[in-house]
Figure 1: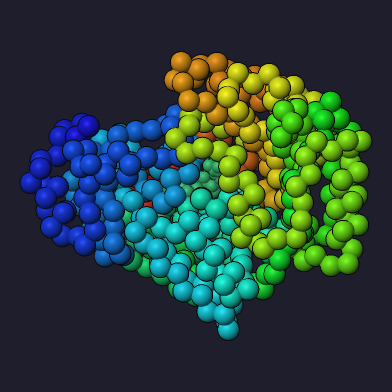
Figure 2: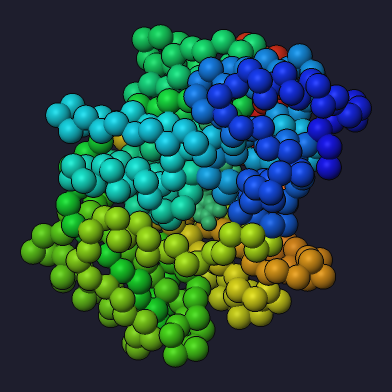
Length: 459
Ligand SMILES: Cc1cc2nc3c(=O)[nH]c(=O)nc-3n(C[C@H](O)[C@H](O)[C@H](O)COP(=O)(O)OP(=O)(O)OC[C@H]3O[C@@H](n4cnc5c(N)ncnc54)[C@H](O)[C@@H]3O)c2cc1C
């Protein structure tokens, strides 16, 4: 693949050389030995071949890349951790701006704040903040990029206790589509500040985030598994249990294969502030089914909780995601998911949902672009490696999803959209879509930043 502009014309070597000479970072072309590694994104199903990968070394590099791509009419995609569901964080023949060298983090333990650059992964942020006994939420896995999470929502184990990551953003530096660098905060540019707290990479490239932090000690956490034929009983009880759960306790449900090879319905949980009553709560959870096939619970550091789910997916495998909101764990919906899980044509499939609510509801649906803050954010995510299985895996996902539709409510998390991103982007933002589109018209009227869950200017 060579670098092409949006008209499909090859960009001259000399033109790319100008960019190489202008920036501190690297321009990696397809003939470079590191190209194949640098272009990789997590979802192999959407893998593309950019004309060049630009590994930026600072905000000034970002500005130069934006201006270069604009002047030469080259499509620009942004890659942080590379884990976007829909694979929009890459481009075929365009420029891929890779932020992975922007790995600075500064924690201020006295003011309980941190400043982070967008190339860090969740695990990097957790490790640094926990060194000072602090944390803020993000994703539930250590390998997700903080940039993509921070701009979409950030629904992690602490979200019910401390709010979403977007709820905890204090300020950000953003390179806009015209190459200018601006500060977004309640005082500096309140509209932009509102838009980037959920509107993803639609408004510019963030080179610096500032977040609130909270004291965070050891947590009680774990995964419990029960035989899959107890799905309805167990999930109904989880639903009931969750109705009175304290904000410090977050649960999730998932289908899994237990260590003894049995298909199982599982419950993940984290109690962020364990006290004398926590052991009783765990015992209650252990009793949700009549037999445990997996019991991996304990008191552990927050960084260990953040790695509990890391082995659930493998980078480079093919994934076809479908996500939706369930207001409750309806017995028929749970049976559809259990049957779907057992009959998946894929090597493995992730099927499960995360409990929302709690402190997420302290923020009004219009205060940020992220409106859907209650219920269970649920996903079906088959994983396979052989492209010959593409059709079968997609067909399976769509069939299970269609059967579930009567049990869903309108809404989805923008960061969990897949090939349905164009069709469902309005649903993800609900009433906030109108304001997001108006602000897109102000900040990026030409839709220069379109390799994302795209909000169309002014529409
Ligand atoms: C296995 C898995 C588990 C997940 N678990 C969670 C979870 O627990 N909680 C949760 O909230 N989400 C979760 N997600 C979703 C996650 O929030 C998104 O996939 C997110 O976009 C990933 O960010 P990234 O930087 O790794 O991805 P990338 O693909 O690098 O980036 C995604 C998009 O974000 C934008 N972007 C990234 N960095 C910048 C930047 N600096 N400036 C402007 N735009 C930028 C770009 O549009 C880019 O296309 C999960 C995803 C996966 C694949």
